[in-house]
Amino acid sequence: MARVDLSSVHVEFPIYNVRSRSIKNKFLKMASGGRVIKDANQHIVVSALNNISISFLHGDHIGLIGHNGSGKSTLLRLLSRIYEPTHGQIHIDGSVSAMLDIVQGVEAEFTGYENIYIRGTLAGLTRKQIKAQIEEICELTGLGDYLAMPVRTYSSGMKVRLAFAISACINPDILLIDEVFGAGDAEFMEKARRKMITLLQQSSIVIMASHSDELIREFCNKVLLLESGQIKYFGNAEKALEMYHLSRVY
Amino acid sequence: MLNESTLSITDLTEDAIPFSTKGPKRLAWEDLKEGLMRWQVWYMLAYQDIKLRYRRSLLGPFWLTISMAITVYSMGYLYSYLFHMNIREYFPYLVAGMLGWSLISVTLTDLIEAFSYPEAMLKQIKLPYSIYVHRVAMRNIIIFFHNILIMVPILIIFHNVAKVNFCLLLLIPGLFIIYFNFICYGLVFSMIGARYRDISQIIKSLVQVAFFITPIMWTPDILPPSKRFIAYLNPFYAFIELVRQPLIGHAPTLLNILVVGVLTIIGITAGYLIFPARRARIIYWL
Image (cartoon, rainbow over all chains, first blue to last red):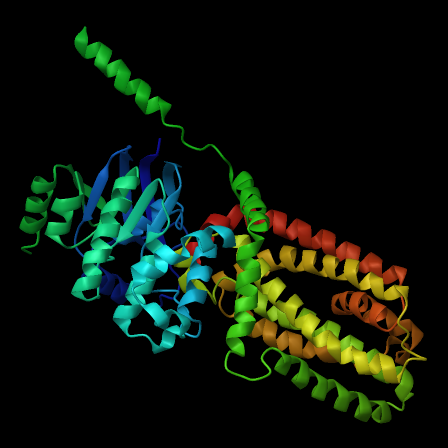
């Protein structure tokens, strides 16, 4: 059974190329919700996540909301094991698949097919497993003969289709999503939506960051509201959204 | 009563959370192990790097071979006269040496950027860090096997000097030792390179100097006997000999192998000291 536990987890980014500290301090405070402090070696440190203790259990579909710089993406990267906590402990039970910045890493010089193989391999699939799924992926992209062309000839919407189709073919226990519903025409959006729903149903735990209230209401049974890297509220979706919109008034 | 019992249950579940007690050494070891097991990933990335560089050119990766061939053939011809060397002795020595040098020097400069160059990728998907080191090492080994074609005409033209014999087989263990050292030193250098961005510039200029002070264009016996140790103890020389001597039909000397052995032990120690201790910080340096 998939399970995620975090116990007083901190994530702090050291900033190494800081010369004039005071100006940088002010700037960072304005630009992000993250708090800027100094660590033991007098490095400037941005505290992106601050004392997070939380557990996600089987069946949790978590909506992750918060203003820009509140730590949503950092939390997702922490859960996908990219960042290791600077303090505190994290335990993840189950396979994780992250759909973060999905278009990133699509190689422009390679064809659609080649990109499917590259991404599949990176995700830990063998050639055989990719071959078994390739038809489904191609069908989902709806790109047809374009798949044999280099990706640099694609429009941005087509790139999103390709990236989405590849990412969506992996069935993990824990699915992490960061604002994937981007470009794409109506027909594709409908297809992507259906795929997404089956993917969400198959995953044991889903954590998705979104700025869309409708998506959160539709797909999530719990909402985690982050503010300045701290948990402000965890629980009922309506309550969290209400709090989120209230805090918008600066 | 009821309150107490529920309390104890929640306490129990709190305790039951199996937080990993794995130390940094264990995690580092798992990183290395998983990195080896997922060889398809780094082999693919390595090959992709090369393909990408020559994507729309007719000859593809063989441009590497051609540009290398032009350099070494013209150098070999000119320098044999410049140094008053017997061309039949000198030409194979220089070409084989250049193959070894380009393998080691290019890998060294690439390794510094093993983490900082694919920065975006490291922040996007979780892969063992060792995969990126394997990728750089493998990429350069593949390039080496393209370059080795340059030796073919040499071995034909100078067949009475540079003999193809069973010593050629020593190339295989030699390359394995070199690969192993790429990984050990690679872990260290790539971490230093990720943390201190000036290092890559420093190394690049040092490598240029190293080319001249290492016996590649010249042989150690040009030096007076009392000064030859400078050449023999040169780490570049020791590793280059692992490639050069088998290619021209000799075995590396015992002293060579000894120097390589010591360097390997230093590499393992450095990797052991640095990689487990700072591995978790790498992503924060990017």
